[in-house]
Amino acid sequence: MKSGQIMQQSKLKILGIDPPVLLAPMAGVTDLPFRQLVLSFGAGLVVSEMVASQEMVQAKPGVRERAALGLGQAKTAVQLAARDVHWAAEAARMVEAAGARIIDINMGCPARKVVGGASGAALMRDLGLAARLIRAIVGAVSVPVTLKCRLGWDEASLNAPELARIAEGEGVRMLTVHGRTRRQFYKGRADWRAVGEVVRAVNIPVIVNGDIASVAAARTALRQSGAAGVMVGRGAGGRPWLLAEIAHALHGAPAPSIPQGPALVEMVRGHLEASLDFYGPELGGKVIRKHLGWYMDAAGTPAPLRRQVLQAAPERVAALLPEALSGWRGVAA
Ligand SMILES: Cc1cc2nc3c(=O)[nH]c(=O)nc-3n(C[C@H](O)[C@H](O)[C@H](O)COP(=O)(O)O)c2cc1C
Image (cartoon, rainbow, N blue to C red):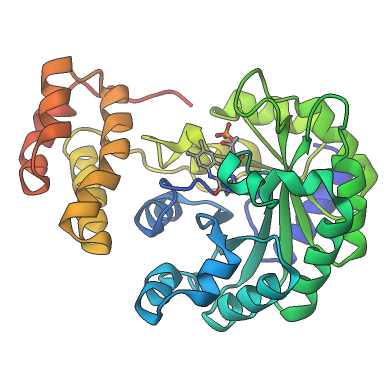
């Protein structure tokens, strides 16, 4: 680790981000139950699913409270998608009032629904609007504001360093860069070296993201980018302890105790129950299926049993878990 990286890590510590291993925001995945599970093993920060500013502010009170659940938890950043200066500032004030400790601005989401509305990654094509949104949000709150973006819209416009300089000038305290362009969506490989261009452009800490699903990948991504830390998304599916393993191997954090056998079944059952409690049985039963699929991928669950688990009524799933997870031998990070 270079001295610059160590200095940037101390800036992250001031923001309460320690160790420098972060869970990526993933709509439909990183809900409160999953974020809590990841934090129970250890992580420097978890980021909520994206909240659209205007919808957040205009939501009926019940909806708003539901969305706000968990926003005030320690080590949690709340991510806002913004496209309008007024609503962005209002939403930022609202999530701060709900207890958010850090607000993250999404300028990386490639979804057409989001870029069509000129937010997410589309803001990388309109740095003027991006700057106005950042200024509105930073000016509206006193909590730290961070930003997540991609390398650029496409190969011909790799303007993340320019956006990063603007963000730094407007008071953003940390940047996360997913090493792909908007055009790539999730195809190809994340370019960790290109993230290094952003690291060199600014004096605030930069976090490298994309395709980091093992200790070895985290080590290489840090080396190639010179970033202060890593953000892990899809790799944490079915392996909520992965961030803690990376933090242990690279940053000297305590080693996580990775559950095996009955303890693994107990952990998955806890995740299932938390999901059913959080959303209610119908929606909770649906949301947890994605996670059950990942747990069963790691266990090599035979296809018929896998189908049975994924099709079972939520209250029947727990009874099937011991057999469904019996093949789990642990996954080396
Ligand atoms: C299902 C899914 C939902 C996502 N939702 C968001 C989101 O709400 N906000 C965001 O900034 N990025 C979102 N992302 C992008 C991730 O945060 C991350 O940048 C990307 O998955 C690359 O990291 P990984 O290779 O570790 O998964 C999403 C990704 C996935 C797969």
